[in-house]
Length: 91
View 1 (cartoon, rainbow, N blue to C red):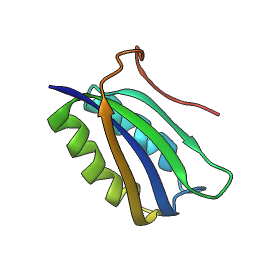
View 2: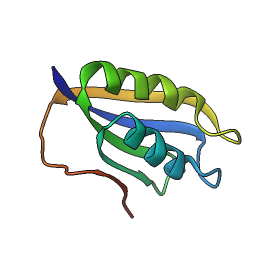
View 3: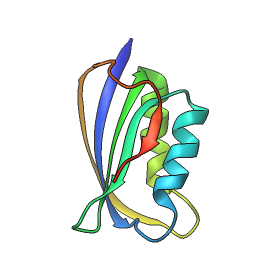
View 4: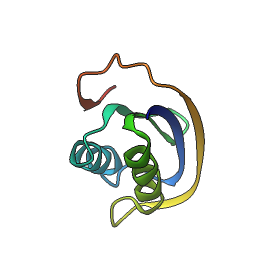
């Protein structure tokens, strides 16, 4: 089953290559969507794909790249949209 997860990632997640890390991991898991920095210092992402791979990506997001320190992640699941053709960093 395909799903969509919308994440807001809190902690030290900007200036530590978190978006690039998300891009590489999402592509490795064959997920679609996007990731971006938010003005409040959090990182926002949408991951779409196979449910198990999306859940694996969420677990990976708690670790992040070496210099990141994730304190919490807000996750909302919703219906798969299918409008993305790849995974990218957006601004």
